[in-house]
Amino acid sequence: MPATAKDYFNLMVVPTVQEFKNSSYDLRLGLLSTLVLNHIVDHLAQENQLATDRNTMDARVKSKREEILKECQDFQFIWDVADATKHAKLRVSDREVSSSSQLSGSSGLFQAPFGEGVFAEAAVVFAILENGTEKPLLPAVISVFEFLKSKIRP
Image 1 (cartoon, helix red, strand yellow):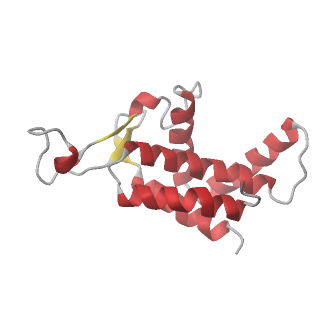
Image 2 (cartoon, rainbow, N blue to C red):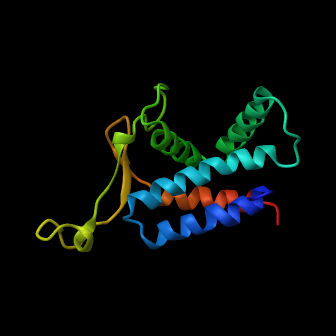
Image 3 (cartoon, rainbow, N blue to C red):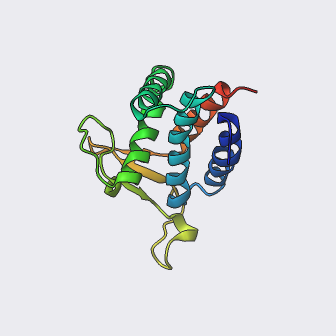
């Protein structure tokens, strides 16, 4: 099991994000990428800290999450998608994504069933935001990945 944030990042985040980058049309890989990127916050928050009561650990994670949100705006989208993936529906109304039903992917020409694909159609994983616009997942995944990579101790 990963003992440090760097271990978790290298074991879980790096290969998952790389697989999604290589298969950007794969909804499963996109959603897994958001989950591992979201959970690195727990590892960063608890690094070099003693295990203690749940409230103290939750406060550390909340503080780390707020720190990341100040520096990396795309993290909010990743967090929303990860939470919607994990919990199906979110009660918080100020999220960009509040339900797993808002997450989808277009299959593109070569992944679509015969006769349904369109030439030059983009194959992407995206979310339909609360305001009705579509937002692709990969650019945010890459942005958050690069930001977190810069924060992981060598």
